[in-house]
Length: 319
Image 1 (tube, rainbow, N blue to C red):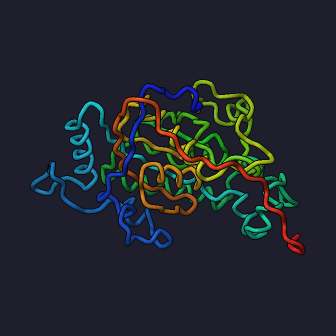
Image 2: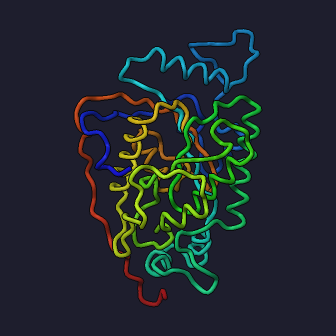
Image 3: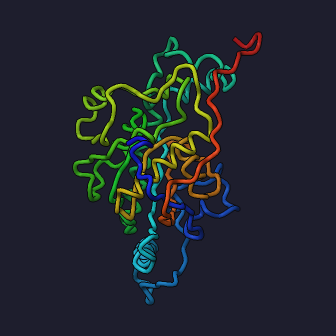
């Protein structure tokens, strides 16, 4: 789905509904936060629409009842969705950036296909990255025991590290819509576009061969239509792209609980678009966000979008 196919006669005004997850709170430190041991960050609390006066229900059951009540009591032009945003596990490109340092990575190595250790074009998961996705799988299993509301829709970036992370994360959980697991691949759910070869995607045929059960959104191109080897997308352009993704999902998907497996940049932009505080995720981590979307007549308001940039020049002596 591209931005051109998004409805133009209305748009959504997004906001984050805070007070439900620790990640919403300004005193929660992203660098030290553990989504696994904190039950994905759900805050133990009562709700105005209390389901369980005798305390027999789990926190997730009470939250799900409250979420459904929010939707039931809202106006026809307002909807609430719980988004589970999962970052892919560590990729070979993450290792390469640490190896060479960010400065040298940005000015030289990210533009190459790889080094003597292998390629990072459409970067794949490392063994640690696979392990991080397995940790997410175990975290979901634990929360299923706590009656977490299951996603009703699953979306995934077309880059291999996300395709693989989603596959490992949701394997064997027994959740609805996961047996078989057939997430929808969304082109706009990409990492920051351009320059870095790790952020170019494989062909549709190659993706289909490796993940034959995955579904492609309508209009998904055979070859990568977004990667530019000479220009890097600006953060504001990425924000606009991820806003288009959310407009598409909220306009077309009636699911209340949605899973998106994506990248640090994409998740940063989603949080920005919905008015959530900045919250950087470690590779493999998950953040839940409760989003309120108000349908508003007319086309989406313009965003100030900065131009893309070329690769920075390497300082003398860096290479």
